[in-house]
Length: 78
Image (cartoon, rainbow, N blue to C red; front, side, top):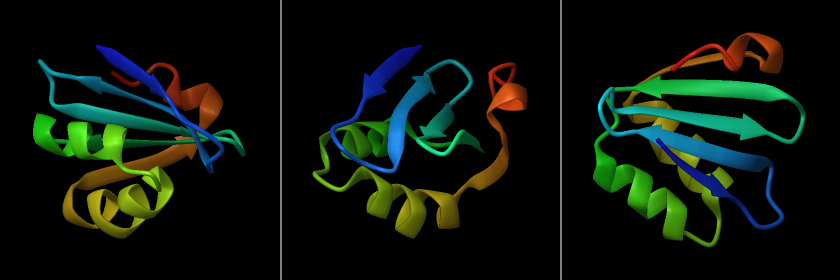
């Protein structure tokens, strides 16, 4: 699993599990969004974009099966 902290952003960090193709974004407000069946290439684009929250919300969250939950619940999702 790869963890990428972000620069000042609404997304505090995100992780990607290559085996499960799961992307997990942790937001600064405590919200956690988990997206399944995300290609690894999308993770790499997200990691390199200067505006990760815009790419995540405007593209990834719209294209892949995502579920948003409170942070305490999101910690247990892999």
